[in-house]
Image (cartoon, rainbow, N blue to C red; front, side):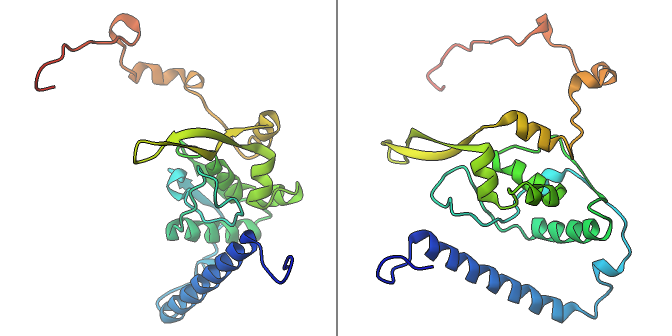
Length: 215
């Protein structure tokens, strides 16, 4: 899709570059697979009925396509471990009517709110597609908010930065997430209180240390 006098927009150029990178990556993976195809059974030949993944946050760096390349707070790394997990969970889900994948983690979101999209992509891709938010940009427009604020650069100067940093439509997002998530809070597990050490004085206390020449 070209605009004006045959000139492509910046977003179109970036999408074309992303497409070429993805095609190159797939070709490289196909070549690696061809070299190892006689080394053992394929994953989808093993008859696996379910995948249970502990510390699922280790697989949060799953690549996605977006036009929001100039918005901070959207790291888009290409983790081979996450991509491998994505393929395997997709095989299991497709073979068992969208079921058979269980993730467990205490930190589904640790660095950016976009990580919630990744968790939903693993666990409920069909639901998001049916709701019209199967693509990251559609999900981000519905549930995320880009905020402009001054931030200090490495040189000590301030500049305006657009960062993907806030949720919106939270009740709807929470309802959607809870279709696949069983959230357990510490108060739901009173038996753990016996293993938690007591704070002296019952609450956090600030201890002021006198400054010294060395400090």
